[in-house]
Image (tube, rainbow, N blue to C red; front, side):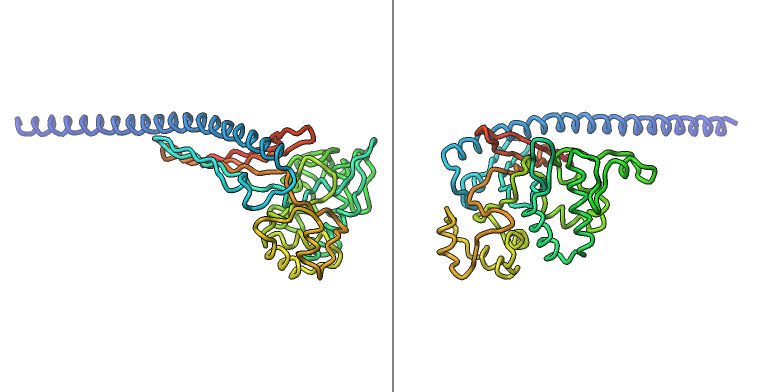
Length: 322
């Protein structure tokens, strides 16, 4: 009987120890999760401060550059090759400024008047040429043009293939929306247009932007890469894609400062742009900041514009913690 009693006591003790061990493991896991959550929240707060500080430094750097050199910006400009790099005990912060002007500004599809936004025919022709190079069906292109203009303009009169508030707020559209009646703040807003969804988002995501102006389409030829060949070709009625690629590949590292130099460098081409403007400097920049700190990673893209008041400002930003 004593042996049986000892066995029961031993089993009971082991069960208690097992139960206490399980409770300790659960409490330990909860503590580690809470600790990791607290560490991440601290990283999130610190990364936002880092992002804002890099933005301030970038704005000062851009303002200083454009006040003393607003005529020519090349790939070798100090803005683009001298990154912000900060090493800390716990991580590394890198901020890189890139030219943000070499994209198809969707807001240049219109011209601002005293009472409304009206179509910009030159940019519309460039849009058609660009879509032709991407082999997009003409009917979809016409729909996209009208829907973009109707989304921006201030009236309620739909164009031939356009859409006004009756569509976006109607029973067939979810969620209920209204047209912007303003310039696009972000190219992502194009996703709300049916024609853009039919064409395919990759074309717009890779090549389009929404700059805070509607003064016509322009690109800085000094910072173009071969991936911008369709954009360059779209500015001209009779410039094939292969010729655009040739021109981009032969832009000298020191850049071109005016149209006369451009004509001398490429005498066999008529480079008097008909659908937009060739320029030699930039007013729009993208700041790409990445942070690696205590095992966490985060990235931000801040879009900076040098305005008419000779000061830069951020017109959009995206923070993405990883």
